[in-house]
Length: 206
Image 1 (cartoon, rainbow, N blue to C red):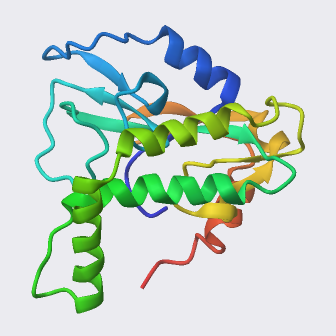
Image 2: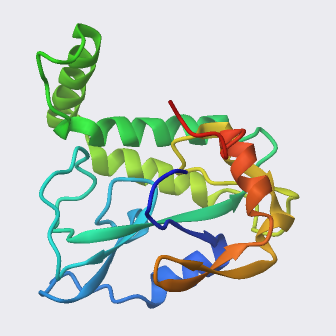
């Protein structure tokens, strides 16, 4: 909220079809689009990103892939919520995000606590196995109930944790809206979705 980017949300069956049909070439040529996703084995985050290789981003704090990335758009798959609420799965997601946060800088402008946490990430990045952690995450995702079998669904790759849990029905109807100079689709119940995560998102942040 309060930024000027677009994130993409896909129901899990649509996400699977998208990932399977996208160009899986490992040779990312200039001016090409490519998909980096945990299911393809080329990403260590629990979300997918479509990358525009004709552009370059210089600064990034997360080592979420070992490949060139270009500029990207995040894709969040929506999965069924298991009976246990998915607490173990979210914990594994947090571990994947933590391991990838090794590029954050250490600075005298930051608190000692923040710098120590960053140092811990850098050490874990060198000693830990990001590939193993995302494989564990993928195996847990694969054991979730089929999409459509539960009334509640969750974005398990979300940084907002349990807040990003919603009624499945809100992802069934869409409206077309203008965003910048393009027309795109949003869920009809976007207000419900945003308030579930952010509360009063119409209130400007400090």
